[in-house]
Every structure is written in C-alpha cells, then in structure tokens.
Image (cartoon, rainbow, N blue to C red; front, side, top):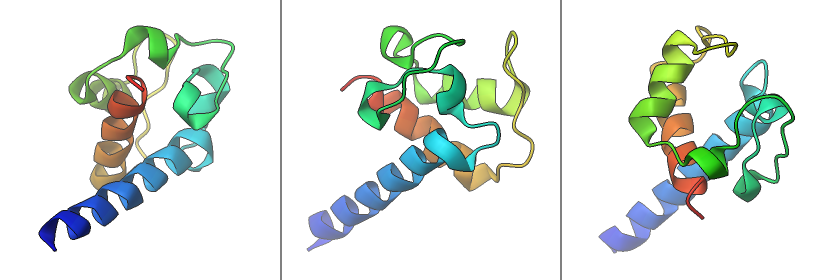
Length: 93
C-alpha cells in the first residue's frame, strides 16, 4: 500500500511541476526552454533535454537567476522543489 501512496504523490508532484513549467511560474519556463516531456518548445534559453540538469542546478537557477534568466522570488520553497525535481526528471525521459 505504501508504494501506491508514493506513486500517487509522485504523480501529483509531476503534474504540479509540469503546470509550473508550462504556465504557473511567471514568466513561464516554457517560453524560453524546450522540455519535450512537457510539450514545450522554447526559443531563447537552452533545451532542458540537452542540458539534463540535476535538481540542485535547476533550483539554483530558479532561486538566483542565471545569465539572462531572472530569479523567481514569487515561487514558494515547495514550488521550487517540485519544479526543480520535475525538470531534472523530465529532461531525462
């Protein structure tokens, strides 16, 4: 039963992460970044599928910004964690 609970939490986090990537984070990550698993084809920033960043790298970029990418101070720590883990996982699919 604990496996089923973990699986449903992981699925919920994946959906939240995808939603953050596509539209809930402002500006949306998908405007700039390609991430095939999310159906996103960005035109400015690097492709997440090419970078395949780990969650720590994504988290750092979201918190502090990097290059032309702004920081996202309006995201909660939980949202940042969910988004970072989603990008790290989805970029490897």
